[in-house]
Amino acid sequence: MTRTRLTASERQEQIVAAAITAFAQGGYAGTSTDQVARLAGVSQPYVIRIFGSKQELFLATVRQASLRIEALWRAAAEHEPTLAGLGHAYHELLAERDLLTVLLHGFAAGGDDPVLGDAVRACFGSQYDLVRELTGASAEETRDFFAMGMLLTVLGAMRVVGPDAVAQQSWMIDLLSTLPAEGDTAD
Image 1 (tube, rainbow, N blue to C red):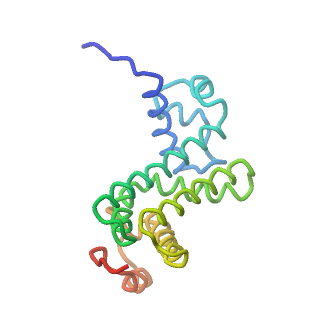
Image 2: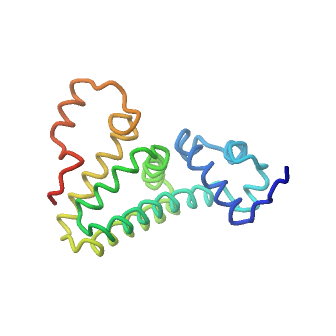
């Protein structure tokens, strides 16, 4: 059996995919490039050669997570360019808990690190602008859309919602009963 050699771009994607998993588990401060390298099946010096630093690797990871959301929304808008259409598409991401958790870690780390802060604000701003562009929603409607999305992100990270949700406690049932059903299409 012949092994095919990955291109530099494919190897970089492989490392970022491993980084999403590693950073989701340990956060920015609690994850080393060595952990990412082991998950990716490469050496730690190779990770540094490709990305330069842990910070740059984390930035690439957060950007990838943000681009994944934007791509999902663009695809959804081709069929239903409404906040409801984009919201339905976002529900798909609940299955990608690591992706959402990395974004939460990025938001948290961005408060203490100016470089990370600039990057996560740029990602969030890009998403905000994209939602307004795709849907024509007002600033208030977009704010409410993101507020609901952040709630779903946090609930997904805690496994309150999503494909492998934990057994629901009374507070979860109460809170979830206030959310629109996934099939609802009202904006």
